[in-house]
Image (tube, rainbow, N blue to C red; front, side, top):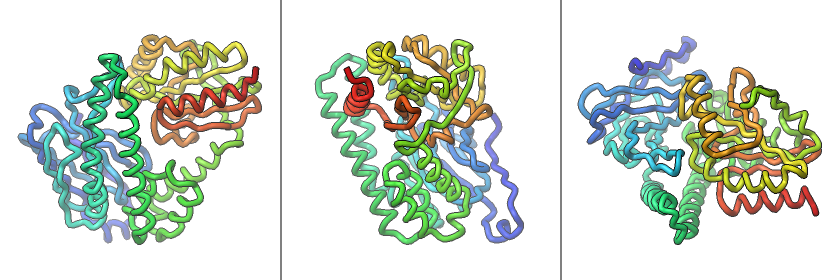
Length: 389
């Protein structure tokens, strides 16, 4: 793959006001033969590209970004990945604000998320202040995840509950810090980007209130427009709203049409073969399916394989079908294809797994983000209420 160069067509006034573009110099000790993957946004769409080394332990990424945006950087070193069965979990990525400026990153290739960042750009520095505050907790989170991974692979359940609770505390601490930031700091692109990251945490009314305080430049940016669209999309999947219709050929070659399932209780499960929490949730889902399927319960799995196979649709199909077979999934399955219908966008999917429970009337009655024993118990209780003895 050629070295990444981002080219955007912009109006003349913008070009006059913007800097020439960005240069990100990544000095990563111990990078060896590994390359770097960057996840960013271009023309309103998510992009993933590989950036190759310029010289030993140095990767240089250049281009132009229309507006400041959050970017993820990962080292492609599979020896660092955690594995549970067939699923994998890469180590934490380095997240920073990308703007048209020079940005210097210095760190260790084996733990890129601990790198230091320097720049003269205010938005870059403002967001990095948040990252620095959270860094000790991020390091502790990764340490706990590695310990939990080792225990699961050894079928050692002792202490796993305590680890899960500690991880939850660290997650909520990070969320609280970000909420405090967006509420206490004046409007900025960094404020907008942090608000975007909190979208499913804050009530919609609070997100709308904070969004309304941004200036027109921030609101009309690609990120601002996307966030406003997400706010409206989230209203579309609010409890009590009718399920968003879709129809697509499934894994067995037959049409999966959600409208044909009205009268049944339907669980829509957005997952991926690459997603550890998704695949950990499958055994529990199989038990619920066996218990309630004969009573009118159906599951539709919608697998997003872009993270594991990139744009190659043939590879996406292979990864998807392989995971279905390995996990013994008997329910309806479709492969996410935005060229048919962008269900990830329409259902406002921000993380995996995300599940929606739809009642017999075809309305949303539950939304679940993530996987845990507590969340599964809540789903089981809701199903029990929809199928009274």
